[in-house]
Image (cartoon, rainbow, N blue to C red; front, side):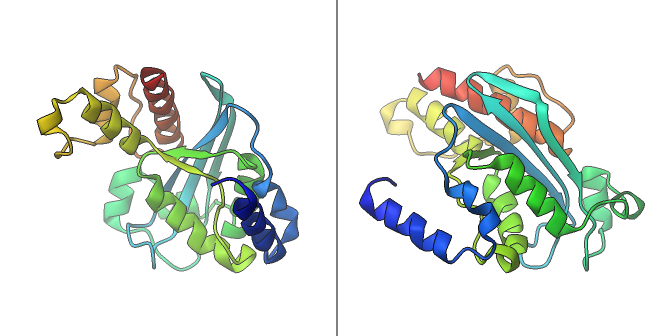
Amino acid sequence: MSGPFAEIKRRWLLYHLGDPRFGFMWDAPPPDEWVALDCETTGLDVRRDEIVAIAAVRIRGNRVLCSERLELLVRPERRALSADSVRVHGLRERDVAKGIAMDDALKQLMTFIGSRPLVGYYLEFDVAMIDRALFPMLGMGLPQPKIEVSALYYEYKNRQRPVHERGGDMDLRFATIMADLALPQRPAHDALNDAVMAALAFLKLRSLAA
């Protein structure tokens, strides 16, 4: 969204921002920069589960900047880790007990992201988890544009289909996407690994669409 209405909305949001120190998230983003984001959680219930790990990595131009990354262990306040979640991401109660408080993690994350657009694989879930935790602090969620890797992949593959076959089902599993794009795969369900793989997929799909 751009134009006069977008500026009015930006000013309205900044006026109602719960903590004005984070108004920089509404600034114009640096050109050709993004942040790939991933979270690990105690489960998949957006209303009740909690974040236990956050990772983010910056993308600049056509490069994934692994030297400019954020890795945080987060100590859950209420929700215990289920056996199923431990099997998925490998983080145990004693691991996350060493983590930082969610508010501190959010402050570090917002500072790291700045105003850069966000990239991720099934990013909607991660952002929903972050926004729920962020709302008491800011009165709103992350404002940055969001770019979904699986949607980019679907659009790319759909264009390759005959017209009469377009719009059908497609295998959008992360491993399938990475393999089909001939990209290196790291062990999944590690927040940093998933963020880096999403960044690689984003750059590859962006180049294919050029």
